[in-house]
Image 1 (cartoon, rainbow, N blue to C red):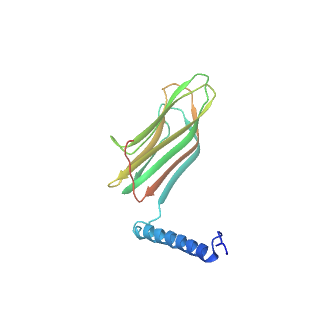
Image 2 (cartoon, rainbow, N blue to C red; image 1 turned 180 degrees about the horizontal axis):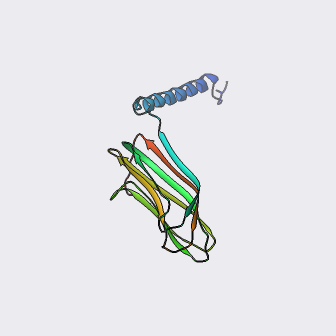
Image 3 (cartoon, one colour; image 1 turned 90 degrees about the vertical axis):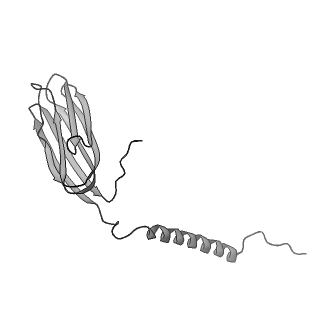
Length: 164
């Protein structure tokens, strides 16, 4: 009497691999079928920078620009350096117009210290609209050096912006 082999035959293994590849190909086709050429538009990236700004007055040298119609995610980052011997309450904002989407970061800059600041906002502009960035500090306080300021807006195909 002969015992059947418990090792899978090469033929059955080949069939399983073929079935797996067919399933992966079908899933890829299904996913690819949901994307049209109109949705596959590459993002538009707008970036501005300044490596060294001196913030002397209560309002910093700011940035503003008009953005074209569409949906954007916008980030701004810098590090702020207090040049004086007293702490400074420092507030930075990025916004998309009055009563619209914005972000703020408020920090206390210790004397002769640096602090990283990062802001992010997402917004859909139904028509051309403003984007602004700036920082404030108390009048009469020491200078703040704004270093490595980077502002980047990425125009995206879709935007889902809601609280969690």
